[in-house]
Length: 221
Image (cartoon, rainbow, N blue to C red; front, side):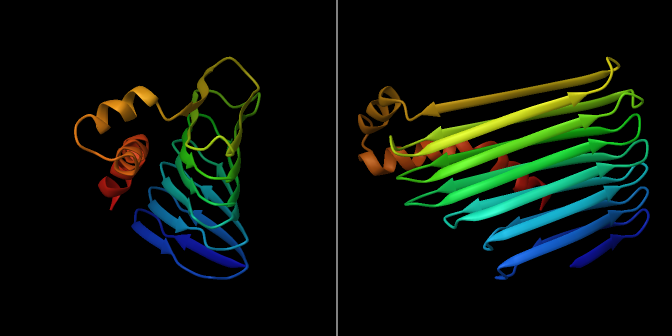
């Protein structure tokens, strides 16, 4: 197990690179600190947990491309003012299989979370995406938003996306949404009519689908 502590009122960026079969990381982000954590999963099974203290913030980038992986992120907002943003990206080809689980627990009032995952599945790839925002009955004044958007390129690809909210009171603002779309024949035809071949047109539409999170990564760099 690896443990990371981000001291009070500091800023830190971590880029996780390893080829271990299993990985377990525990993180504490102390009051007023900010951590940007980027991970490109190359392992079989990865679990990361974090505790975020008063007025501190964590931004996760959970990247899953072209390799099968199990990725779990659990973030606990333990003091008022704590914030967590969890962004997932997945791109599956051939017979890749992804199991991605993102959970944010609001353990203090006036805490805030965002969870957004975007992905593309081609060939016979499959993905199971689970996201959960949990706010207990005594915890008030929180916001939590979660969304999963998947572009299906192949008829043989499969997505199972399950966003969940467990809300114990009404003094919160929370939303959740899931979309699953396929490549539009009309858009492909339009791009091919302007000189692109089918593969180039498909690649452009895939990149457009992922643009928002890619731009966010660049902005946070």
